[in-house]
Length: 225
Image 1 (tube, rainbow, N blue to C red):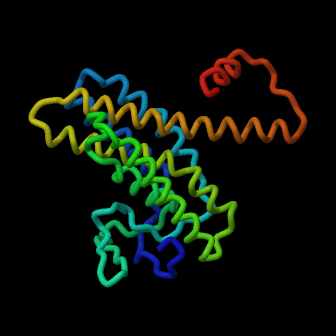
Image 2 (cartoon, rainbow, N blue to C red; image 1 turned 90 degrees about the vertical axis):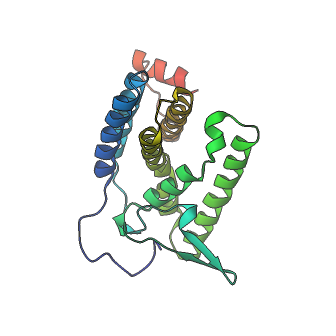
């Protein structure tokens, strides 16, 4: 789909800035329903929004806009995608992140045995298949790497959406479930931060330079190591 010649009829691309705005709105909704983790949700949303607003994908491509496993139909060894009401131009990482966020089984939020292992194995399988598909469609490695590097942020944004919808459905707060979701969002942001730090460090080593011993940098190094 991301290499399709079909384009949406109109409308501006669905940018990282738009997803940032939605993440902040969803954090506010979570706060309204569950005041206990209010500060954590708001701070996470602000961190995420800052990173999303800075995204500059190489190209906006046709995207589903709400891609998840429940929108796949299987028939006669073929796969069909349905529900294109959110079809748009977007960073391809949006669809990948959305899919991975919704791939998480509900048992993960209750720390049920085997759920984490199942998710990580399934996610790796999906990402590897996506990378192969890009290669088969002549998308160069640098662009594919860029897409997959941005996935963490869109995944975190989609997890905010899941958390918001859970809060709306509940008659009473479930702080354990919400806390697990916020922890998952934190993990995705930390993974993205480690990737950025690793890329920076690799560049510095390549150039043969040394980083100044700035106190903030020392703290960042300790956190990310």
